[in-house]
Length: 85
Image (cartoon, rainbow, N blue to C red; front, side, top):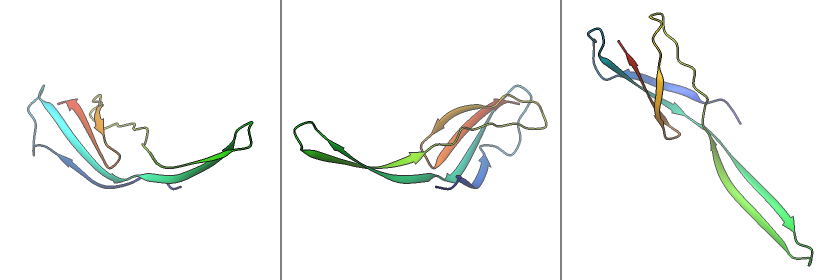
């Protein structure tokens, strides 16, 4: 499993007046893995659970303007953040 890789960062406007909302969209390639587990019951029967899991990053966003960025959504390939200009 590897760390997610950012492919692009875009903003909703080319500039922002002070106090307005900034929206940043980050597109990334997530990290996923397959998990398969076998369980045995006391009666001797067994079952297998197989699934694909996507690991979502834990985001920390900072900038040189000391803004506080908030994660608004993350679907496993696109994360959206907002801050006040």
